Length: 184
Image 1 (cartoon, rainbow, N blue to C red):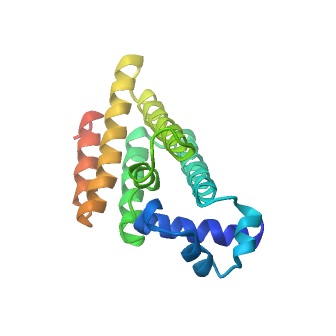
Image 2 (cartoon, one colour):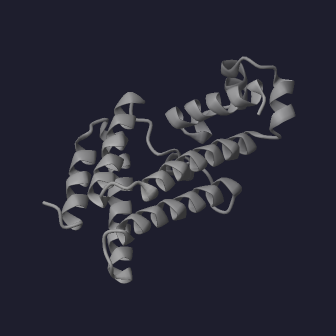
């Protein structure tokens, strides 16, 4: 990618993350990225295309992290704790930005490319949690249920921590996830 394109994606991602897709205009992105309007249109035909690129980048980063955790030799418990601890650090270090996919889904119309990207990422994330659970729970059916519960706890923790701008939802979700895994 070119430096201007990278700056556009990074700037748009920061602004979309702070205020949401619908609350950020192209002109603001262009100004904050310090590029010319023509440069924007050389790289992206629309704000939606820029947002789609940002979501794809976020999804790829998330998938890489999840793949590393699934391949990690530590115990499932250690990896589960690590995932929730990393979430808490990210939320506090980034001033509670919230989930980029959930924020985008809340501000875009059903049926469009952005909603499709959100749905794909949420499906991939759910599969990660099921995969982690399968490494702990020998029964396929039980692993699916446990993975879904972990997915919901993690997703809910992001939402509530962001809403309240506090870390206790992540701490409680982590404790609940450990309890569901049979660790007291």
